[in-house]
Length: 311
Length: 249
Image (cartoon, rainbow over all chains, first blue to last red; front, side, top):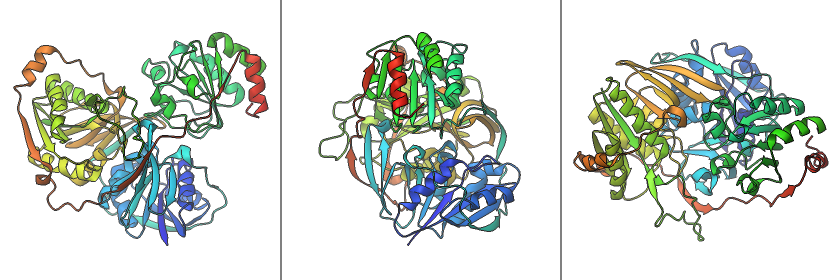
């Protein structure tokens, strides 16, 4: 029997879908039982939401003082303590999970299996290395497996139909060497880039912050999230949270439309799992056309308005 | 304050690696090797902190084979004061790396450890967090802006939701993201000067006494599945009709 503990990520109001994707990965292990661990200061309401995650038996709900739940330092000690009774400890491969999980692995004396993209069996997993240019099969012969689950590789498990038991815990000695100061977030009205079914993205070819307006308009027209290449973020056209690729977000929408993105390998890594990739670029030799399902060579400033009209 | 920067020798980021036909690894013979780009950013940040007067010494360390001295010399040429090679002839995994670095940290007592958020070869993104955990000190990962004084660091982190700012009490571990800075270029006279800077070599075995290594077994290397060849369309009308056919709009 594999006893699996999954770290729930949330923003205080909603459970992050990465959590439900980690549950999907956990379900692919034979003969499993799945529990969730969640930390918050206002724990009761969010723990109730975690209890609605399908396939979960128990939610360990841990109340933290103030904003400690947002910080790796505030949660890893208790997390590792509760992880003692489990064979598998999973977290989403989001920036939160990537921050927290290696600490838990270290406390448990294990290496972590990062960015699991496929479950082979209870001890064997596939994960990408070299920015996705190679895939390795990793086996852990040990009795505790700590892993982060690549969110683009797994479907979201149902987040409504569960009825897990909630078990409450406290943290006795809260830490104070790390303080949360602020979180600056961008646009909240468009769909979330990480989980959106459609994504419209722009690159250096868009040319300026002002020019990105046409990307946003097109996205709003078809209800898409917006993304960008690293070049566009570095140039200051858009904020960092829009970056798609190896060091940004790795996404798997049904439709990905790239405007003025040449397609550096690091960007392509972030979109490989997309259903349909559409590339629009004025350079017919742009590497993005090597991975696109539909390519159109042309001037995005003519093509976007035409799409606005015809979609 | 001393700053310790941990770096790794990796296949240069411009090289497109190929999986060996027998699935035993990736081909690295004769391939250009460099400092992991995130670690180069870590070196640059440490040097800037030193230049601002907050730190007095920048020590650069790596764990690797003897030829990783090349990357240490590059770091010395950038401006680091001295270097430590922890010699290991086999590849090691993150928990062993963190354990080994901890022994250097305990000896050198730095106020800050700065390192790249991940190495671009194994993409593990684990060692900084593990070092902070073993050291029982705070961590600030994926940092794109850093302000340091004698006792604290204010770090802005690139997170999925945007930019998160945290304050950590020193000593602490910082892991760098791409937009933290742009590393300086090395000048020729500095390369000459770097040859005379101290570079100590120690054995990995002397840094991990008593460590129980729970290694993971890598069983197979494969090339990723290529995407099916797509089509080029000539007009927006063709694009729109294809998208409609697929039910995507």
